[in-house]
Amino acid sequence: MTKIVIRRLPPSLTKEQLEEQLQPLPEVDYLEFFANDTSLYPHLFSRAYINFKNQEDIVLFRDRFDGYVFIDNRGQEYPAIVEFAPFQKIAKKKSKKKDAKAGTIEEDPDYKKFLENYNGDEEKLTSTPETLLEELEARTKELVAKKTTPLLDFLKNKQRIREEKREERRRRELERKRLRDEERRKWREEDRRKRKEVEKHRRGDKNHDKDRDKSKEEPKIKVTEEIMSGID
Image (cartoon, rainbow, N blue to C red; front, side, top):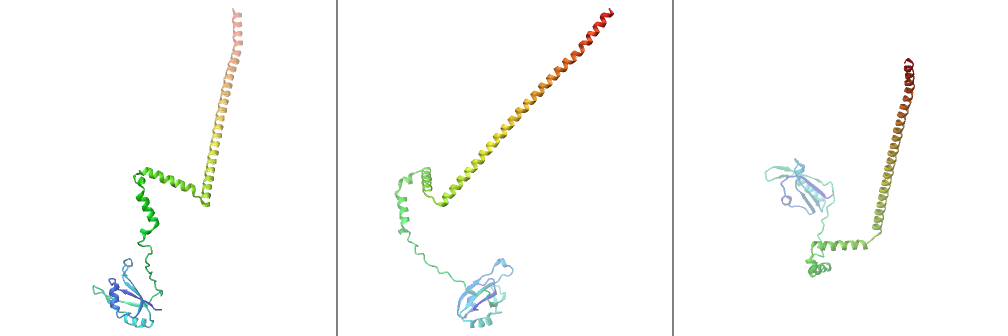
């Protein structure tokens, strides 16, 4: 193990100040400094990770700086702790490669074609936004109509089947509604007819009762007339 960590450094300490206080520093190939993290209050300490090329230098460095008192700009003391880093691997520095296409846009064929269309088409510059929008929509529809893939065909077919099923459900629902309305209409007509028949029977019964009552009263009147004539 060749990577160590120095903990509990002053919060206000900078990387330049740390490097200055560590001099003379043995040969190292990695030194990473982390300033204090305010989210860890009240444990506001800085820390540094160092990787030594020679493992023998670690013992000398530990004996020198383990317990070494760092003093911040306010005179407060911070005893440092030196120990092996839990993670011994070293972060690789990404090499910044220059973009080969940087500054070559003037020679780009697509850019040249764009400039020709932009500068040479006076008709497009004088067109209204509505006209340009219509042309764009027409071109889009033309491209969509020409371009097709198995996936697009599958999606279109799936959409068509879904619409057919929806139309079939709507048609069945309308048919059921029509049958329900027809059934209600027949029921109302039947109920109306039955009511008329009951009313007709009631009227017939009333007339029959009147005739029967009248026939019962006529003999009494005749008997009364005969008695009266006998008395005379």
